[in-house]
Each structure stands twice: as C-alpha cells, then as structure tokens.
Image (cartoon, rainbow, N blue to C red; front, side, top):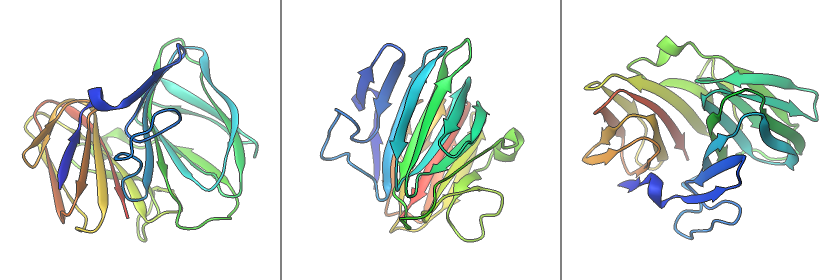
Length: 232
C-alpha cells in the first residue's frame, strides 16, 4: 500500500512565531485516521521565526528526532546539554524517565525542520540527548542512516526503537531503493523536490505512507531531498 498525504491535507496551526503542519494528530488537531503509522507517532513540519522558539517543557518515554532543513536550532535541556544543529543535520532526544528542554531559533532567518516522534521499545530508562553533523555527500544518490535502533547501524545516532531515520538527496532522473519488509511501516517526505514512489507522485512536504512492500523505489522528478522513517 502506498498512500499519498498531500501537504494541503495536513493539520495546521499558525502561532505567529511558529507555523506548524502535522502529518499525524497533534495538539488540537485530531484525525482518527492519522494518529500514528506503526510506531511513528508524530511528524511535524515546523517553520520557526527568527529569534523565537519553544520555551522549556517536559517529555517522557518518547524518541524525538529533529531534522533541520534550513537555518539552525539551539537545544538546551535539564541534563545540562546544549547544542546547535544546522541544516541537513540531526539531533535525537530519548526522553526516557523525563527531561525538560527548550528549542530556539537564535538565527536571523527562519528555521524549518521536521520533528519526528517514535514510540520507544524500552521505557523507564535514563534520558539522553545527542546531535551530530552528517557528511552531505554520504546521502548523494543513496539513503544514509541518520538515527537508528536497529542492530548493526554503526555511526547513526541511537534511538530506543526498532526503527530508522534516513536521508537521501537525488538529482532529477535518479532513483534510489530501500529494502524493508512487508510488515513494517515506512513514511517518506520530500523536504524539497518532486518524486515518484511506485505510481504515486509526491511534491515537497507531502507525506507518503507505505506498507506491504519489501522494496521501496523512489525516483526524483526534480532534484530532491528525502527523509524516510522505517518503523515497526
């Protein structure tokens, strides 16, 4: 099954400093058909105004992955961690037994990002945070694993779920394949560009929900930047 979820169909809330679009039910947006996709619970497409952001707030028992598309986000948390994550890079927060954090755009330009929440396989563990830059050429024409709880995924930021977050960049006309299995749930969003998955075309910021396939093939109809989650 391949289901297109056009950007225009997503839940939305514009708070002035934050323009948020929700692929799944979140906050005041609720769609009983879009509560989760397997263990993928949240995919928010956020635009954060310059010099603004999310003040300190708590989380527990959730794997929270932030993929920055433009600009940068600065993280601070109750463990004493602080870091700035730039466009194309990733941060991961395993909320565990509880953590409070803030996320601010301290730049003079808008920051755009995807925030992805995955339900953990293990609960009640100590909270943790990590971030890292990933070589941009490592995802040229192929998927690079950015965050993972799967055995053998060396070099990825760790998460506490049997899931992967992957990124790829494709030139127009290029294709990339990803091997999964039919019982898993994949969710693909082109950050930029227009792509085809099977017979389904998706433009930038559309969601593509995929299950029942062993091989996913994505073809770029325009230069494209892809983010893919593969979850149980």
